[in-house]
Image (tube, rainbow, N blue to C red; front, side, top):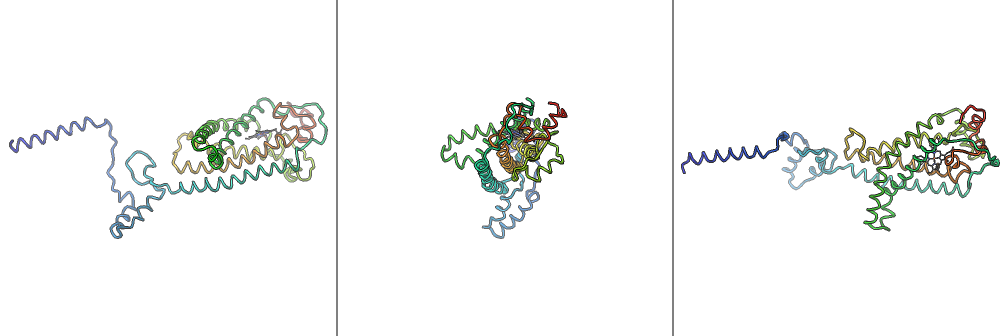
Length: 343
Ligand code: HEM
């Protein structure tokens, strides 16, 4: 074969290769810019110099890798360039240390305080005998919104506490397989009940806000802590200052924080960038607010059930005895009796 023929066949086979390669390539190839790694990552220059001056010293490489910084990668994943997310360790220490330890003790203390209160004080009884005459306290819509919020919250509290603490007390008893299956169910109940809780809280807020606006009578109630220590009766409107504190501080503010962070963790907030840091921050906020709200809810559930005679009847049936109304919410009682409040 002559040189000319050899060259011709090489050129032809190259052309054929290029044509084949073009046809085999996907229609729209993303343009990959050529990048000088030394320009993109300033540390890289220092690393290279260090590698030359101290060949065995890989500290600069690990220092750079063990940071939250996203380094350059050409794969289309926003966090692939973060080799080790350093703040993940800080998150782990807060979640598995501060929140579980201090939050756990706070829950135990709250439960202990409620138990002590029940043992020492017992159920708060009515001073006057029941009259047998009933007065309307809650409409069916009000009761529905309360129980929807209460049951969804209790489901969230139980499943959430299992997610946070279960591995410390259930895992050793149940073993990995059973505990894993249980937690999968708990997690799904938790994730799907969250938005229901948010919706019921919004409904509850709209229905009840007008009767929870602060008035000057609340100051009298607060100054004597609802007469809890003196045993003296403090007159209040439909809701006393303690209930208003629970409404605003517990249900509205903490409910909003728990719901908002929960929606982030559920990844259902539109147009939000879900970075690992975003999820870690949401997780810490969610855990702290949820524990505080659970502590407050424990106190509320106690006083709304076995802690006070006749309270549960109102939320169960919609009616309370007139003696209860007069004793616990005298200003409201007077307004109902005078016809100022139409029920
Ligand atoms: C599951 C057990 C619960 C029981 C037995 C219970 C009981 C009661 C009762 C009896 C009342 C009426 C008090 C009155 O007549 O003045 C009430 C009101 C209320 N409950 Fe519950 N409750 C429970 C759970 C919850 C939960 C989990 C929440 C919040 C997530 C909640 C939030 C409220 C609020 C905000 C009020 C009205 C106070 C106000 O608007 O100021 N309850 N509850």
